[in-house]
Structures are given as structure tokens and as C-alpha cells.
Length: 187
Image (tube, rainbow, N blue to C red; front, side, top):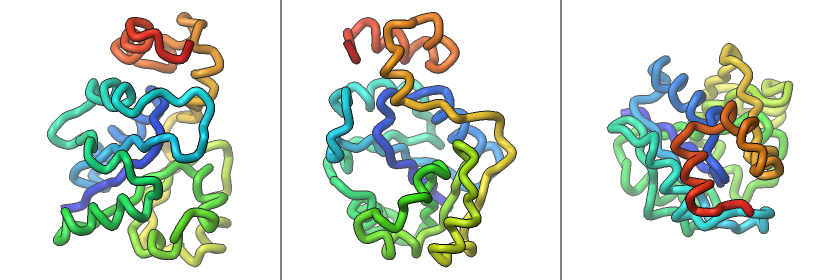
């Protein structure tokens, strides 16, 4: 089985995240996707507790989209991948990331270990993906998604305009927006 691994803060999960997950599944790049919201190990501003981010992600959970609830406390992606390799010994893992992450990928903790994985990279912010993949010697075993509609939605930008509910209706699904409002998140 081919399993996509989508690690991030998902603070909050937005339509861009879900659009890329659905695109990857619809195009059969993988059989299922694990979404793994992480803790706040990088001192991000205004990050809410992981339990709330998991709750928002549950709106999208299906038999092909699984929200990870056990590995959220691991501080680095390579540690998460190590655990997943134990769990999915006979499966092929694909690390899913936006192109903006590939720019500084060589600064990630134990990035060399992660380079052994297959990658699925989706375009963001006009990053020249191939340039950075060439620098990492990672042109093989990489799927580059260029033909999706604009998914340059930023969770950081959403948090900055959290009180502008009209604007957020275009960026967040109704259930996620209601959860944020009902739980007074990001105030």
C-alpha cells in the first residue's frame, strides 16, 4: 500500500490543506493519507493545543484520510517517520509537503534520513521546486504537483484575520469556522 504522510501544524486546517489531500487521493498517487498535526516545538505564534487541531481535522476523516492521534508529541518529522516505518513495515511511505518547505529542507533535523522517502510536493508561492530538488539530489522518487488550482492559503494569514468571519468563509470549511468560534480559539 502507498501511504501519504502529511505533517504540519494545521493551525487551523484550511481548504487548501484538504484540496491537496483530495487531489492526491483522486489521482491515486497514494492509497491513503495520514494527517499528523504536531505540537508547538518551534514557538509559533498563536498555536492552539493539538487536541483542538485534531478535532478540526476530524471533519475530514474517512477510511482514506486518517488523523494521527498518537505521534503528535514527537518534535521532528524524522522521529514520526521512524515510528511509521515500524507500523507500516511493508508499505511505501510518501512525505507530502508544500514547495515552501523544500527551500529549507536541508536545515531539517536528520533531513538525510527523510530523503530516502518518496516525496509528493505541491506548488506554493512560485517556488522553483526542481531547483531545490536538484540541490538535494532528490529528483527521483518525487511527484511534483503543478496543476492544482491556487492553494496558496496560509494558516498564518488566517490567524491574522481571524475576526474577519466573512473573509474566512472562503478559506475555512463551515464546521472548522464554527469550531473556532464556539471554542473562542485564536482570540
